[in-house]
Length: 162
Image (cartoon, rainbow, N blue to C red; front, side, top):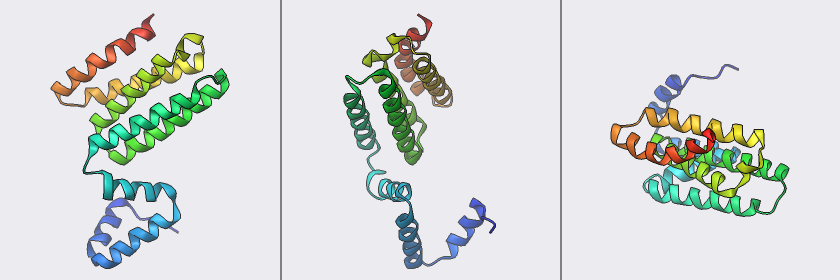
């Protein structure tokens, strides 16, 4: 079976009546948790982006709180899980400023956790990759936002240089 392109789907969805469109969305949400989460975001949380960002930050904090006291191996696994959840929320939002803000917050939490001082190459690489991602996102933003986010990223970059 050949999968239709986004453009083909868009054209076809334009011809579907609203009631049938709602039924299609519900059917789509029924089969995958991620689809249901995206639909929930679009219907209930998309209006209040800052509130959603704050709830994701709370979720990141909870993940770091659970990680305290665990050994390095479990901490690495937990960090990957926190990052995976954060990236999922970033995809839902589809906003570059929100992506920069959440990734900066993740890196700040990682820096404050003290895990980077344990000389783990894996954690150093994970941290460096996220900073690289942040810099790439910030470059594409408006000049005023770039300045604000660069001020936040500078202290995080210093940790890599030392």
